[in-house]
Image 1: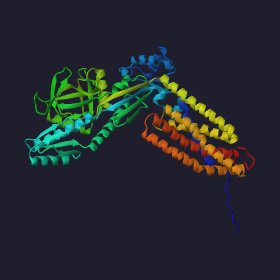
Image 2 (image 1 turned 90 degrees about the vertical axis):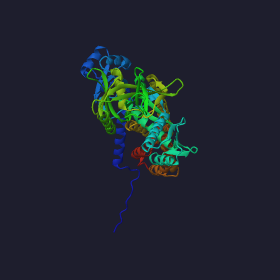
Image 3 (image 1 turned 30 degrees about the vertical axis):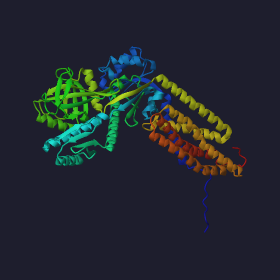
Image 4 (image 1 turned 135 degrees about the vertical axis):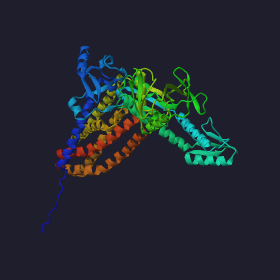
Length: 604
């Protein structure tokens, strides 16, 4: 029998690899294209604004006032008027404010300038960060002490209720200034019963003896840390919900430090409306009204400064509100229709069933900082109504002010009541002109870096250098395409710095390969064999170098925020794309152009 020897074709790629390469670069090119068209100034009309005219009438009206329109888009009840002349944005908003019932629902924004056929394919421009697009940044401080105080109050009320139910006479339960609770009793049996109750019902509270007649109780440090983390996380989620209610897209809401929240709103040119909602801490609570001088009653003030006596603990709080809408009632007065979750609806149903014919007070609370920087809570009773029938998970309240104030209250409640007071401690505004200047300067640096790199590679490595240049251009297409496709990816000014760095790292891959090819040529190999051995011998070095840099990029993205994450993102993507183009794309081009060249006198 004759043995058949299988020979491997040198420097050969299968057809499917070339197809994969072409398809990948083509898709990434289409993904990157919308970014290079830029953005147009626009005004967004939220559904709550209640536009009085249809799009055709609106188009004719704006044209008659000299507004240079590009198009009017409608999606999910939201209308976006896009301008051809960016300088007319303020004039457009003024005209639109006359055609809506609620001008506060108009938002200055930017819309993609790419052709509709490109956008209809599902491709969108890269989201730009605050430093490139302009906008506003808020730094919020979450005050945790009031949350600890609420836990202390609930604990004290629970211990007092236990003492009353078990008829433990002579027991005193007092809160202390440092946040602890002191329980005094001379009876050892009572002290043992109270200890058992606390250990069973409140295991996160630490108990210690304070003399022969009292116990000292305080929240454990571990539980305080847990409460703080949960509070900040809940406020983060509520902030995101509020920003969604405002119709602001591409916002960045991140935790910064132990108890601060950083919010970036790119493209927001008038931050007043966002500030009034983001910085507000509004919450409703419903109380049973008590007689003056009743036991376990507290005093709240109404809008006229009159005292209203209510129970110390509310029937339920704003955390059970899932929806709130402002409407006009039967008497033409503004009211807010409240929709509760299942648990809140059950609590309200039980309370109202047992208190028909009795009054119930609705309080509105806000937190702010005084001139000394201290947190100050203001609580006002906005309505006292007699319960006429059993209430469920849907009812209305009055007394929220005029219709505009009722709408603002409904928005805050719909977006969520803060679990802790927040205050704005820092505000930064970056104008759109500065953002444009940053873009111009950043991409000028990128173009200069690429130009010098392309020239060097072409002159130093000759024919292989121009292959590397084609791979470098493909690398840029892949990066921009991926940035546009990845959800949540934002390009910042440090991100552009990462792109400039990526240019150098991308050709690093080719430099390593080309130097290996030159070494193999010096050994006397043919050009085709030098190409094959050069790519193989450089592969492990390239992987090791890029892997170690990728570790740095991942760590920067994980622990950094804002600009640092922008730099880490482009750096990480650049590493992946440079390996793809440097190893796969460059090899495909070199195989096709020079893979069958067995000459030994080639200069590289």
